[in-house]
Image 1: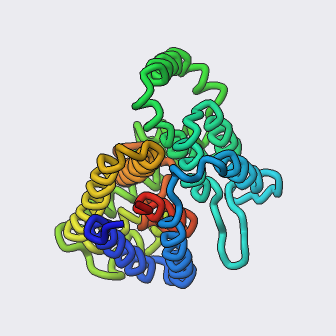
Image 2: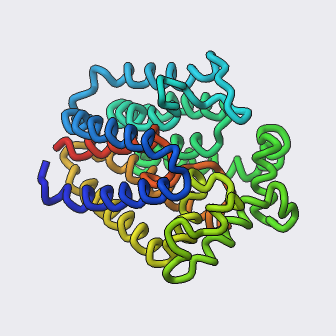
Length: 332
């Protein structure tokens, strides 16, 4: 593991860590200690990950898949209901979200078996929790397999077209009412400004009111006065833009740029190790997709899906899984 190739990643993560703790101290100080515990565990998992090369895990690949399915089923079997969904496990002081924890495990499975059909089982379990946002990001882990397999690419293009044709049936029979409302209010947030459209409208106000320099640390009206819901989770980007302004946003986007750029470079350097190539590309696409979707929904450009912003939103499960994944990527 070259320290020079790893340096941009380390610096990017340090910047994101600093903003994460800074903004949590402003918006939700009660969660800072828990977040620091998650970062500490994640750092340990990073070094554990550096000892795992996907190429050498072929004998354990099905174990990764089985453990992932068990973890995903646990909240459903234990009937741990939080806000109408069963997607969390309480372990001591930490609340773990299995759909985040299993991402590196499933990527290890996919990188060594290249079995996309089996991967649809955990995606289906996540949908049953229900958690549409996480199911999307877990499904996207398949992207490297689809890219490198022409038959799979044609199949998924066909399924995409079929999905469009049957979209009215999917809309009427498969989507929950809250999911439909998210799409409807994305198209017209003023339809219900004090109800389903409230989050997006407040998020756009927060982002726009930040200006160039921001309103100041702990001075944001939308975040501090609780106009902006989920300010430390789904809408952390909007709350940060309000207090730190465009300057803070540029720092965040720059950190993400160098992180993604470094991961893409690492992907091209793993041509002789196909499992590591697939793993690296899958995690890179997952991180990029979460950044794109989360910031898009904060700006009102995409529907609200509950997808966390990597390394910035409150959520120990996501941070631990991401740091573990980065350790595996830089295992060689």
